[in-house]
Amino acid sequence: MTDDLFHAGVSLADKAIRTVAVYLTVAALLRIAGKRGIAQLNNFDFVVMLLMSNVVQNAIIGPDNSLAGGLAGLVILMVVNSAVVRLAAAVPLIGRLVEGSPVVLARDGHYLPAALRRLGVRQADLDVSIQLRGGTTVADTSFVRLEPGGAMLVRLRPEEENAERADIDDLHARLDRIEGKLDALATKGGSP
Image (cartoon, rainbow, N blue to C red; front, side, top):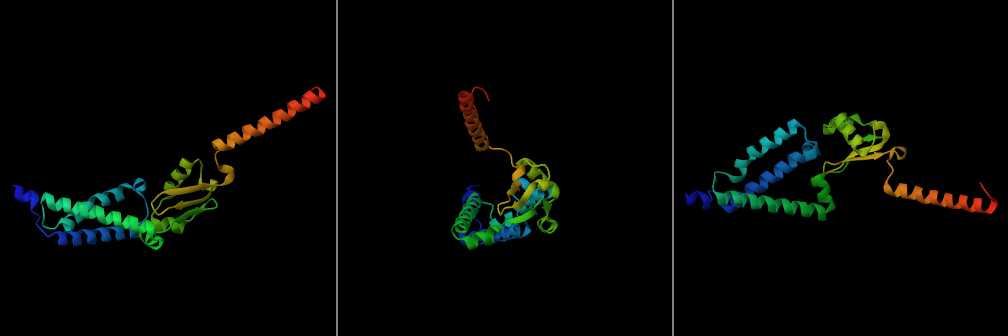
């Protein structure tokens, strides 16, 4: 029984090559398939992700069912991922290659149908992002952009922006100055 736990069925080098090859292939396919993040996966995307993990399992571990072999594959996978992430952060060209670049999905209050089709994003998905940002419809936006990591960036037109705490504090300060001037005028001339 302990043979199955600690004696790997394939060499560590074989396991490393298999793991790196599968990692690079899956990463390339996901890069080609689209930019949507985990939060934006639809049911079909989720099913594909679940099945993909099962499909590539044997490609990574090979004919090895040992605990040691599985743990070695896991460590190799984590090390490769960590190296790719750090390399992408350190070298902008590699970052753009691995993650891609932002894609504008709506501009000046209008959807860009070609960009939506190319990425497989529905207008309804954009509408939800717009509403979460405080807008009502795409007409309220300057632009909507899908970022490389899958986040949706919504920039509302200035007149549609919600007031923030600094805006309110600025208005309070202005009102205080106006009240001060009115009080000074009232004191000088009797009543306003």
